[in-house]
Image (tube, rainbow, N blue to C red):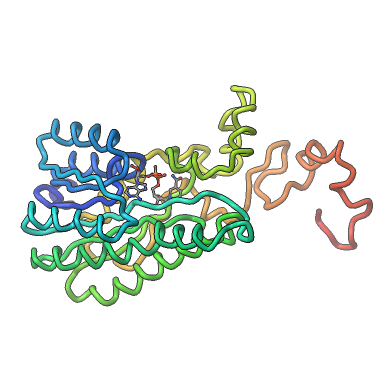
Length: 308
Ligand SMILES: NC(=O)c1ccc[n+]([C@@H]2O[C@H](COP(=O)([O-])OP(=O)(O)OC[C@H]3O[C@@H](n4cnc5c(N)ncnc54)[C@H](O)[C@@H]3O)[C@@H](O)[C@H]2O)c1
């Protein structure tokens, strides 16, 4: 019954960054739902693996090595899609990412690259996709990957956060322009999904700190950061794409799905241990444990009326 209502089988999808990470999961899930997939990526090994998985499912697959941030390469990918498929129904723009750094430490070239990687290519990709979707004369669905960082003041993510916020609002605006044609445009905002991109965003000193943790403590931060106490897996993001791409979402346009286990909803509230519970900053037991040996971090006297 759900498959019938979703009505995905026989459709055609483009996945920009569909070789590995979240994109690889999206490509496979779409193929499992009976969708023919065309995807590009810079990671040729991941692409070959995903293409083999898709072919084993009996779906048509077009894989194309291309750097989505290079306009000419992206255009060549879409030309290959247009030559192979008569129409397009779903376009998923997954490419994106960040190398964390203080805003003032970034160069103009790094900032421009971050903007192209997280916003610029999305505009170009949507520009290429819409004429192909129009060719099918039955509407379609565009899904752009944004992030929780587009929705909060994410220190050390400034340019990425700004570029993803631009993608989020571009999506909303173009959704209105294309609504009469039933070409829907939505965003998915992940957080803490394990992937190469997620790990590579960490600064070297952060990776070293995590690697130095005793194995039994690995991942324990998730318990107070993610309300669902687990990192959403790649498959959870892929499911959200299936939903937005399907007829079950046929009147949903211009919105963002937060697939993050509740971190956006918590908005800075953490589930502290030592009896402190959900508060933005620990009040009692955790404060004592964290700061007992760190006199400098604790003011000698509390300002009148302060709960901290
Ligand atoms: N993983 C997370 O927790 C998380 C959190 C917030 C937002 N996001 C967003 O979700 C999206 C996917 O994240 P991910 O963690 O899977 O990323 P990822 O770095 O693992 O990349 C996904 C795929 O895109 C490919 N790719 C990267 N740059 C490319 C380029 N220039 N051209 C073509 N292909 C390229 C990679 O090779 C990979 O196969 C990104 O837009 C990211 O900003 C992810």
